[in-house]
Length: 173
Image (tube, rainbow, N blue to C red):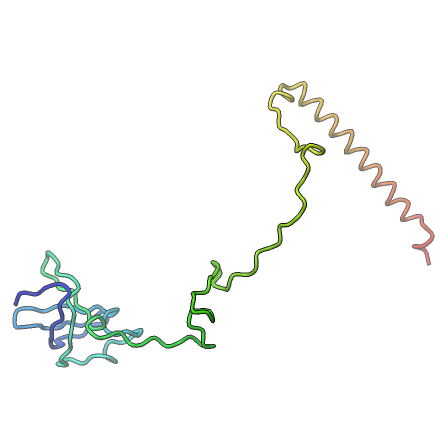
């Protein structure tokens, strides 16, 4: 028998394994239906769907160079009608157009309002990085000493505030 990819043939189930079923199309031609190609639903046990000796319609998926023939039962049958989703959602809005969805799978939310007044960069320009302004070790040492001085000022201010809170009469009752 000369098989063609994409054509549907009738055959008899000759063997069942845990990964698929062997279907004899004629005396000298046997192909295999993988477990994923048995039915349009999830198949955990092939024996729940097929029995040895059963006659089935199969579609030829692939003819391998090594003589292996890949078959499909589910592609030989018409696809079952899809059930509508719970809640009556059918993928379309009231006007018949498709709804837009974001990556999380939900409906797109309204865009945030960006109608703020633009910054006036003439009055307050953004800082500009100048790679030549602070080059060399002496400049780094200056920057470090300024940082230390400002940190010590801040720390002493913070210490004063904490000491004042400890001494305040409102805390004593």
